[in-house]
Length: 86
Image 1 (cartoon, rainbow, N blue to C red):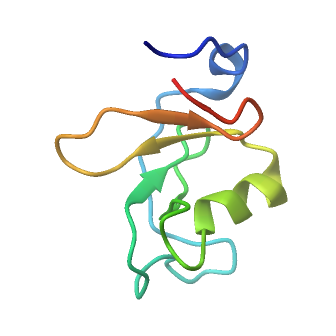
Image 2: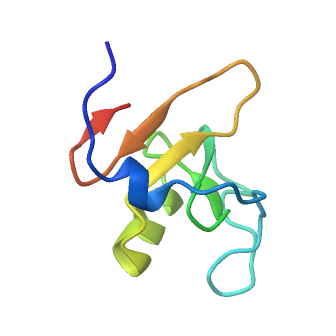
Image 3: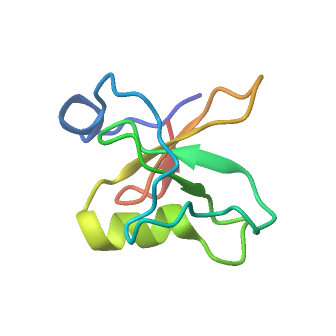
């Protein structure tokens, strides 16, 4: 069962995922881990299973709390504030 999260309404928008990192470098390109995108701004970075944890770094830099899997066949979201799958 998915957790309740009050951040979804304010932080999930219909944006196209893009691989441009915060400093102009595609993140996660050389990392092992599942790619995730931020449905608030479209940022793509590897989730916490990656050594770099780029999606978490993006959260700390921007306060965009929700990530969504970018893997085919996966349908999950994670909220960094609630620390829960949605």
